[in-house]
Image (cartoon, rainbow, N blue to C red):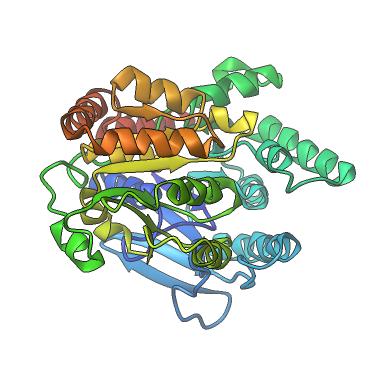
Length: 404
């Protein structure tokens, strides 16, 4: 099979971010299939160009994985209006780029952002091939819940576009069980939606990885490290982390280490300086291939989102990596993610937005290293049994074969 994927936020192992689609492409390549990826030429975390381009797109090859980097207007970290302009620019350039790929058996679109999924539908329609819609987050509902989308006309149009895509997709793939329930509630037939969790690479992330070099580099050799790895955006509610850190300023043993970048990074760093938080380290970004060492440097890992109802439906990818690495997760997200951590006995749940409870939980864990280690072992065992990415990729391949 030759499958075409349009994903503006695709990440190679040389960049910061989640590489699930790269790993999927490598897996398919090893079995004689091809996943051709149409991506933007900007990294979604840093906003920096990933490749020099001449014309609409530039072609890259990563060990047999073909990536066509299509033009996008560089405004991801500006206002939301300019981000929409950026999304639209990729929506149009990606169609032109995708139509240069020959002999496609299936087109896969992914959302968010939702506009690139429109591009995928259009290309599939032009080619008269099946269209698989992958839903990674529930837009526009997340945007409405966060207050990013406020204009009732814009919200109505966004929801119309959502229904349009659900209706025209040959099939829908979701990474959370709650997303499937949401879609069935929207009238999508149950047999049209397949839930397959992303899981993680249990070989790449494992408890044997040595993170001591990262601890030494950051000057936290003898500290209790609370690590956050991921985007620093509005949804991630890092302000609650800063308030918790302020409550723990007198606990010299504890350090908060934040790896990542995003629209809110500059403001958050300025806020940490204003609050005189010497216990918070903004550690920058690292390519995905370095993330096993980064996570191995932690004593506990942090996953956090804003306290809005729709975020109770989501599985953050970082939690799977934390679990595979044998690290306990301090989870500040309710819903299906909370059930995952509680079912695995792999960490501690904190009510979203509650910086006092977050500070108390971290302080308690810092004094109970045996409990923390056991949580990490529990998490790893659960991940191996239920969320090994090799199993999930095999499930995805079977779906692709059925659709072709």
